[in-house]
Amino acid sequence: MDRESLRLRRFPKAMKALCMIVCMVMMGLGWSSPASSEMLRIGHRLCYAVSEMTMPRDVMPSTFSCAGVPEGYQMGTLWLRASVSPDTHKSDDLSLIVHSSRFDRLIVAFTYADGIVERQDVRSGDFGIHWRAGGQLVFQAPHRDAQLAAVTLRFDKVASARLLRIRLVQRGEESTQTTGLAILIGAALVLLLVGAVYNASLALAVRKQFSAWQAAWAASMVAWGACWSQIHLFVFPKMAGALSAQICTGLTCLAIALATLSVVTALNDVHLSRWLRRTALGLSGAVVLLGIPLSMMRSGPIDQLGAALGMLVLADLVTVAFSIGQAWRRGSHEARSFAGAWAVPMLVLASTSFFDADAMFWGAGSQIFVLFAAAWQTLWLSIAASRVYARMRVERDLAWQAEAQAQELARRDALTGLPNRRGFIDRVETILDHMRNADETVAMLLIDVDWFKSINDVYGHDAGDVVLQGIARCLAPEESSVCAVARLGGEEFAMLVAGMENVALMRFAELLRGRIGSYDHGAVIASRAVTASIGIARAEKAADFHSLYRAADEALYEAKRCGRNRVAIQLLHAPEPSDNVRRPVALES
Image (cartoon, rainbow, N blue to C red; front, side, top):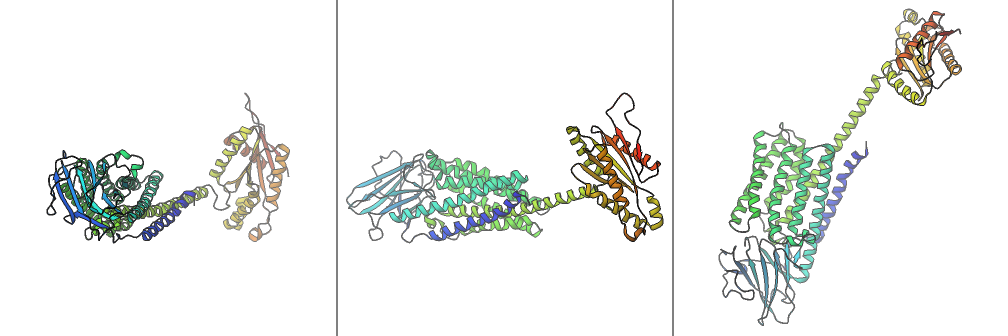
């Protein structure tokens, strides 16, 4: 197995270990919202007022309403006010946490019992030191001897009051919560980033469309997570506020479309009906088409369009769930992987409808659920893809090995195990090319068994096969980098040797002839001796195969004509205008 296959097998273990570390961090930091945190909502501790944006910074509305829903604030100013009870909080150690949304400016006024008002403000594009991971803004009440009486928030051109999440917490608790939330978000983004890089490398390596879509989806979730959590403000501080919120909306729609594409491209037509595939693609396209204008809006029916977008997303998820279920019933292995990957995100999205996610996870709301569900999904699918591709590589390597073995067998003689004519020619061409570059002499030996037909006639073809196998055992030890051995067919064998001069070559041929003649073939042919005639063609410089073969065949014919069981040699010289072949000379045993 090659190194890439081993890496594919090791990757799931690394991802599982990373996931276990994340789970331990989550368990250690705790998931429930601290008891001392207090959510502030309109109608629950928060009263509101709406005014024109021309109202001076230091002036507050004279009256606030604590019932109903504010209207007409998108192009003006929304005021929110909450009284602070000294019995509930330590007024000198309070922090106000606001989940950032689309607004132009936010001013927070801390009003004390002695009438002093301390103000802190941020604006879109400049959150200063107030931003925290998790898409939150933190305003710490200044320390004063007087009791904190109220907190007032002024939002200029806020897009939606419904999307605001506001909490009052103790200052030390705020530091613990924001630090823990940053750790959780960082862990989730690391998982997503690793999944994006890994799936992108898989897409390049195996040319699979699914891995490409999965990598794009994970990358979009990394971008969304960094933008939502405001971590990107380390690099791009001017993107704070409305611009980041708009980008997050667009990235959300893009991620949903890419996730849908990753499913429908992985399930083939056999397992997924065409109408269900088209429905899923159509819904994902509708999500993108509605999400683009919604991401650009700063005012207008944002809440209504957001609700419509939510319905489209829900319909898309239901369609994907039906697609996975149908493919699973039809025997798709990919559907099983998708079922495990999509189960957690779907359960998370469904469960947020039954409990108040905004009050949990230190104010991060349902977004932290989505981020970790996405990390789970990319982790699961990366592990599944790793196993599939590792198995594919093993199968491919086995197929290549079987193909190589088949090609080797095609070049081998089944009876003797020596190379056949095809294998011999391939090997000879390699040796000749090498000898031609080295300017070395080469020689071809044709070895033919004497009176072999009579062996078959008298003792049978099985005995003849045993004889041929014995001769092959006599020749096989000579196989080397400069010597090729083969059975060309019937009772004819061949050898190509390089680098031998005439005397050495004749001694070598005589050695072979003597070895064949003295070989004991056992009881298959009684005590009958088996001899062979050898024809040699030697070239001063490397010649081509066919010239050597013709010359060796003529030398073999001469050895046969002169009585068999002998060696005949023929020398080939460099081409001349006249005949370049010397008459073969037969040497008697």
